[in-house]
Image (spheres, rainbow, N blue to C red):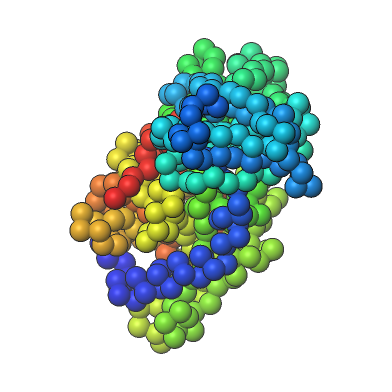
Length: 401
């Protein structure tokens, strides 16, 4: 179904795309990306790309270690390793293609990692930071899982009797962890910097495989969890005020946009109150995020093939009615909007699940996911997921046109 006037909303989205480019250019670019290659033995003609790794002060990370990891369905595979030169530089042959995780470190004290789409990103500089810890708890249908093996990069630990585990000396950011036990082996995204009971990586293996898009536990950058790994993935909030209406909403950068404690589902949750202008035809409010890059840019994949997704699901509560909408690229390269029927929000948290049938289209070439209202509404959101997709599948789902 078409939820909004497509011309009005298309104009809003394109205007906001431009705003995002301006507002977040430093955060998107930041000089942090990597280069191509397979080793340092190739001829100089092949070594067109390189990476420079620095310390937090900007000095070269001389003689530091660098490794390239590839993602398998049930593990991370070390594909290549070498040592930075005295200038902190590592040259790569231009023949390497596809997405890989680049990790660089100096002992256990300084480290950095970045997913790289080889062939798309030129030579660049990465800044290492202090290595950090990662903590979490593994449960099965709410019951602690003891003795499960959790693996991140080349490190493995076992869960304690209460299901807890901890890693030290990891690069800061979002990691792909593999959890193995009597239940099988699954991959999950886990974040560093979640250090207390309210904001710990809590994984319940009762569900089938899923990829967490956002859980709002560490949202200071206003990027989705996937965006923190692969770049882009920016959240935005907009209303018909872009077209002259008088609808209002909180600013995306507001410190009060996250709630904790009794109001939250887990740890922290997103809270947005929309006031919609009743006199403006087609009035609306939108909170959404790009799944990859901007619709009209190609530095990173802007579209993802999500046809293996069995459902898009999330937790929500509040007041009023909300619609879930996706934007996707048509076969002609045009922007399309597809929305579910409205869902009524209540005072208690509910889990909502929508399949491709609910949108009336396939989940292919998906660019963004939007939570939309056309009347006054108060929305609480948490635990947005792509069900049926394992995080280990994600690097292969980006689409180029």
